[in-house]
Amino acid sequence: MELITLAHGSGGRLSHELVEEVIYPIFNNNGGQDLLDAAVIPVPVQPGKLAMTTDSYVISPIFFPGGDIGRLAACGTINDLAVCGAIPKFMSVGLIIEEGFPIRELKQVLHSLADTAAEAGVSVVTGDTKVVEKGNVDKIYINTAGIGFIPPGVNLNPQNIKPGDVVIVSGTLGDHEMAVLSCREGLSFGIEVVSDCAALNDLTKCLVATGAVKCMRDPTRGGAAASLWELAGQSKMTIEIQEAAIPLHPSVAAGCSMLGLDPLYLANEGKLVIIVNPEGEKEIIARLKNHSLGRNAAVIGKVANQDRSGKVLLQTALGAKRLVTLNEGEHLPRIC
Image (cartoon, rainbow, N blue to C red; front, side, top):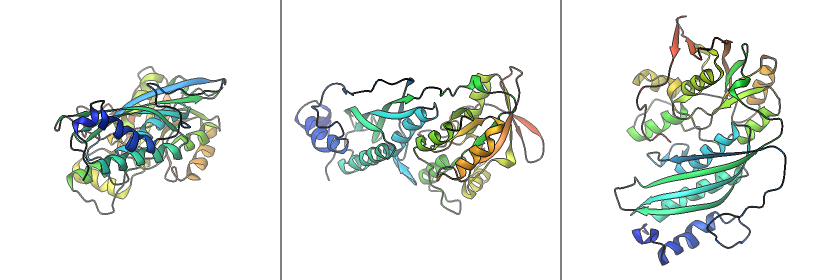
């Protein structure tokens, strides 16, 4: 079995062979241009704005039900652009690889990343590879940057949020974290739960076209609770949500009950938290349910008032209200 060695990161012959024979053929989408120190990209002059994001992925295990670190890296970057109303176009990929990592698994991860990006219409245009001594990295870490274009007239900003706006989630919450947790710890909760890892740009484009969307978030680390807390704080609004309205996969519900976890704090990698004006609620729900990534969408609450407190309140199944805050400490390490 071929393994990554320190020489693959030395800048010498093995480095060039790794890039030219393994990595470059997977991402060969630059029209045969020479490999340069930076991507040279023809960008058409167009109105609108440029959006850029960056992220790093250190998930363990790197292969999990419903995806792997490569698919996760592509989806995470694409979704960060998409929830800003951008059309994702370009991505960079930086690899930090542990000495001894199987080249077969490296190819699997990179093919997954490349295929996911291509399906979303995104080109991987540049990258970098480093190799570190065994034990200094857990198999492979991936860093990405993404660039997209925001069309004229699109302005998804928490400052747009007003009292009476509706809070919608695009599907069941907590699938990603519960899938990774069950895989990592060898747990079973009845029906298998798989990660919701998915590129959301096609869905967000469909929703933004209605003109009803005020703001969106992809609730990754910290879950829906963190996204709602951020939106409430940035808009200075009080957001009220209903515990009974939150959609959950049966295994996520069972796992939360067994382990004492709150699904609002579980990470997602293919869901949206959407704030829409009340007039557009029905159309947004209809478009979500007509899309493969939104069939379990649900209205979970509303924007109650503008009192500058920026808080989130949860009405429990028992009828009481409690404050939703940020999670204290590390909920589950290395979830993305």
